[in-house]
Every structure is written in C-alpha cells, then in structure tokens.
Amino acid sequence: MPKADKLYLVGFMGAGKTTLARALAARVGWKMVDVDEWIEQRERRTIADIFRERGEPYFRALEREAVRALLPERHAVVATGGGTFADPDNRAALLSDGTVVWVDVPFSAIVERVPSDGRRPLAADRAAFEALYLARCAAYRNAHIRLDGTLGPAADLVERLLDRLGW
Ligand code: S3P
Image 1 (tube, helix red, strand yellow):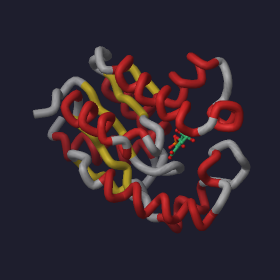
Image 2 (image 1 turned 45 degrees about the horizontal axis):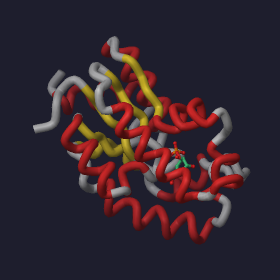
Image 3 (image 1 turned 90 degrees about the vertical axis):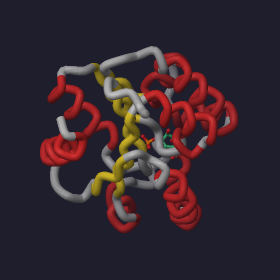
Image 4 (image 1 turned 60 degrees about the horizontal axis):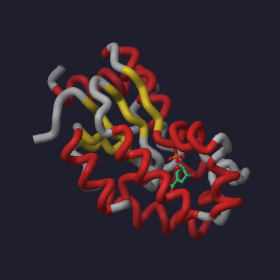
C-alpha cells in the first residue's frame, strides 16, 4: 500500500500539476516540491538550456536522481515533470513511495495551454507532441488515482481530490 503522507502528481505537460500541487500543499499544510525546479536549482540553468546544452538523456538521468533524492521527503506534495512517471524505475519508486495522482487533461486542452515557445523542448514539434501524449497516457494509467484536470480551477480540484482520498 502506498504511504498516506506523500502525494505525487503526474500527467502531461500543461496539465496543471505544479499549480495543483501548490494549492494542495497549502490546503493540507505540507511542503510542495517540484521535480523540474529541483533539477533547475541543482544545475543552475533552465530545463530548456539543459536539453539544448546536454541533451535529453542527460536530463532524464537528472530526473531519476531527483526522484531518488526526494524519496525521504514526507508530508510533501510532489509535482513531477511530464516524463518522470514514464520511466519504469521512477514509476515503481513513486508507486511504492506515495499516492500517485494522474492529472488527466485531454490533448485538445493541452495544446491550448502549452505554447511551442521552446520553454518545453518536447512541445516544439506539434505532431511529435501528440504522439508523445498518446504514449505517455499508457504510463499515467498506472497511477493510483485519476483526477479529471478539466473540472474547475485548482481550488476545486483540491477539494475533489481530498474527497477521493477520504481526507
Ligand atoms: C517533460 C515535461 C516538462 C519537463 C521537461 C520534459 C516531458 O515538465 O520535465 O520539459 O518529458 O514531458 P512539465 O510537465 O512540468 O512541463
């Protein structure tokens, strides 16, 4: 059984994981941790720069390192990156460390929310972006809980999720 003192939010880019994690953490009085922020602070450069200067495999190695480093955190809401839960080792680690919530948002809404401005390197090519979305959904389905991310602003989603968790 996953531990009840930690929540992981997984889902595609633009699903609202970071915003929801922040609202959730404030609501339950836990800390909020963001995998992308952990990586950017550790590297002292942006995700876009890491992809450009070192490539995606280097970024994925950092992402796995972030997951391991954050395992001891308790009473935490962790916002993951869109690819974090797609990695089988990360997936197994998250599923056994906490309750994993998939923030599910349809691709049509994702496209409106995520500009192809280079801030998210994998969103630049729109056809590849959609293929990635479909492939990723297969991984996200392994989450403990699926939360429809279109059902209102973050404050409403927080209450829905707390209901689902029976908190
Ligand atoms: C990625 C998602 C991004 C970030 C990086 C790679 C992905 O996080 O980790 O650009 O592979 O889906 P967000 O989901 O927070 O945008």
